[in-house]
Image 1 (cartoon, rainbow, N blue to C red):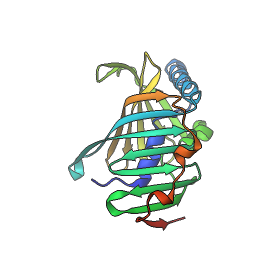
Image 2 (cartoon, rainbow, N blue to C red):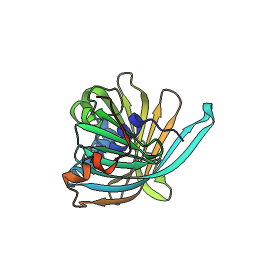
Image 3 (cartoon, helix red, strand yellow):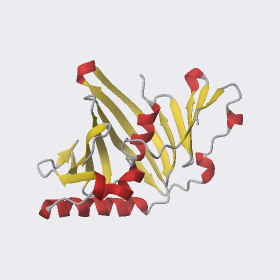
Image 4 (cartoon, helix red, strand yellow):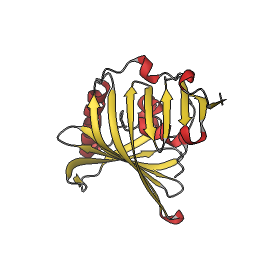
Length: 219
């Protein structure tokens, strides 16, 4: 299975910090209130540890891949394990560790990409995105949920994002991203543990731990 590192980095951070723009009239107010409550609750956590299921579908290419992963997140810092790779970021630098190739790739955190960026979304949500509640969808996998649709106002690498929020916990349960190539990326949270006591050392890469790995600095 091949998963682009840029897609992994962009999408996994969106599982944890979600906000969106206002929507007209009563349904929009409800959508805004729901997202505000989820945002406030999530931002109050010092750190979050999750386990999740990742699914990538593309009917045109006959692709249907499923794998599991886990992540530790604190602010802009994270450590992600998925598809045999480990991705670590201290908020400024991203290290992608690929054991099968005995390789480490180093990249700077990008702020100008057109992916689904939480930083840009939090700062420019009213200008860049439209959101709405989907009242006819109230259940997913036996869970009572709010379903919300997020659409970028300008052309991006994705067309739509669907957020599914558990009503009883007011917590993000699943996120479904539709890109322009007819691919659907779905992350479903299976475990959620807040305030894990994470420290800065959890998000630092130690080259000494990988003495035989080739280090490729792409900054």
